[in-house]
Image 1 (cartoon, rainbow, N blue to C red):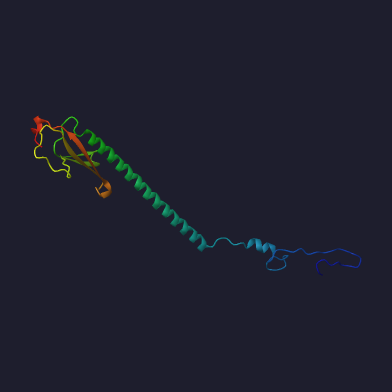
Image 2 (image 1 turned 45 degrees about the vertical axis):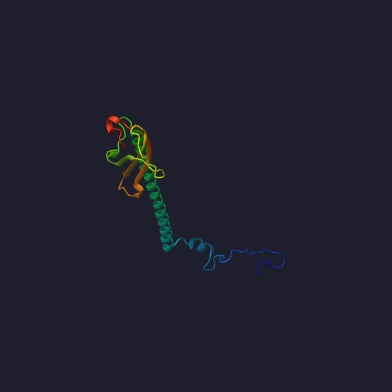
Length: 177
């Protein structure tokens, strides 16, 4: 019987067939509604393994970035502490005792930071030296401070230079240059 047709002569019972989605039949064949619901696919083992591999790669990159960032933060902390120690040492140079040419060494924080302070007379290279020097005249002293920490590599060094105006003490250096 065809859809939309009537049975009997006097308008008996009408039977209509409803249209079902493609691939689904009324249950009389291998692709019935019950069979379609139970044959839905999940992820294959290969798909799951690929997903885990992609996730592992992303986590590896993320951890690498975080490790690099923590290394940068640690270096910034160490360099900042070295700069504070160096500034403190330069501020104290010549206080309490007169600056004398020479070299001194020491450390901060139980040897974590080592420093070397070199003090020497400074002459302007663009100006020829005077014929005579006044022994009591103020002079410029050049202070060069090197601070090292860690392995002392190029990124673990700090060099500061400063000039100080010093009046010679005739009792200490006899007023000689």
